[in-house]
Image 1: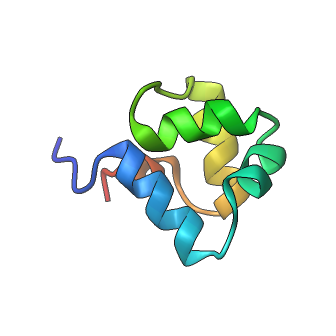
Image 2: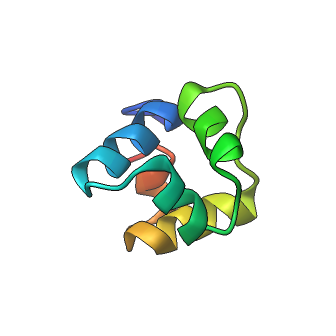
Length: 69
């Protein structure tokens, strides 16, 4: 399995491409801004459930969110 972009970088790219703030994404996936910020910084990894919510929020595949495609 080749990872094309690390998870934290993909999250930041998705957010910026869609013009969202960290707070808007956090609200959309039902988590705190602090937790979401830690995902983007690579300090913390989202749970599978949270990663699925992120994919749903951006209307993309989980594979895309985690950098597999």
